[in-house]
Image (cartoon, rainbow over all chains, first blue to last red):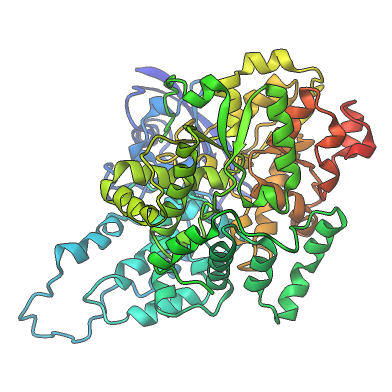
Length: 318
Length: 315
């Protein structure tokens, strides 16, 4: 047993105008989890402390919260790994959500984005008599296993910097779940699903790997990349995101290196005057300082080798 | 949740012993951020190390080529490593967080999966190249700390930063995913802080230091990158930062370029953003006027003059 202070975010909209903090001192073993400590504090010190929890073993996905600035499952976080020098642990609700009460947040935006993607199998035939199995080969199943581990804890959504500035972004969990059905051989809505997800937000992923902290190893960042590849393969390329990738690839194939000027103009669209006008102020600020890429970019030595690699792998380019 | 990676002392590479390193500057340091390339070379001179540029190297894939094909970036990077091996170099030094992460990811896949190494070599064989797997990809930041050493750097400082309050900005791909990088904790890295303090500056601790600058999504939708920049720079400024230091030219472009656009939502921040080698070279006595700081959108000139580090007109 040792003395531990829980430094808690407290907010009850029925009583409080503003959130405040409470410091709760407990005698508790450091080898336990943060969730155990919260349960103990609620049972023994202050019954009004609110947080979601259920399974206590990283299966239900309820107890994601922000612990010393790091979001993750409280039931999977040993106290000893997060105890600060003053023997306190700071606990806050997940970021990117509106607090409901203490560590409990309003999950609606997360669920709305998830259900919008119709996260259930939509097979061709209804098979209403349930007379036969729908068989999937082990190889086909392998693609779906990682996402099948998702427990919807929303840790990835809370960590996503794009969600934090643009709530229209679906977030890593929803895209991963869409991928799970896009790649399911039993599903008949692959094209519609890809179309829906490509339309607006798939390509808003910032490639930051914040979702690599997924406590269930879904690796949502990789699932987002998988989904992008599938959508390009399906021919969904008339948007800034896929245009960017395809023009980028074209310049690397031609010159061996990225051609910054061509990628910017090619992504926005050479005749998209409104789009070009939107980036003009930044371009001007840079140009004034002479910070412009060379207008004529020479290919690297032995660029033919790079082209051979692109051709062998049949990489699509603009 | 704490994923601190044990800093096991590694055997010194041949490059570290001979002070001859393969050098992969990356596309942006040769195009819009030539001041990064030039200040890296000046710093190398000062440190007495030789950076041998791999002039036939291609783009690393920069997280974008992955979106089209799962193999292309890996094979392109295998070609780059083959060039380093042919020159007898076992370290490839990068000066960009995105290059670091994606080149390391490619190398990891090649070294851990025989079939992928075979695939790469069968394509490289078409032009008589091959990669045997001896290369390590390391960022200049890691070279400074592991091979030169903080104590050594401290003793080389001739122009201490005089308490300049500098906010570190790591850039996602030099720390995440941790399975690929793992040189230091991705949750709470401190190499840039250590370096800033070794140079006589004061490191500013703020939550934005490991967050994303938005560079890779700047063209996909108006305003996203500017907002991400504003959010992070607001945090830095509120903690007292006077400037930012980044090991990534993509972060530099976003932070330096977008602070003007983010002011409407996040308030004015106007933090000058230094490339890693610029600030190190400055403290080590490299002529400030040769570091290309006039090319920054947010001029560091007034700040450098106020701290008696350089006359206003050089930046």
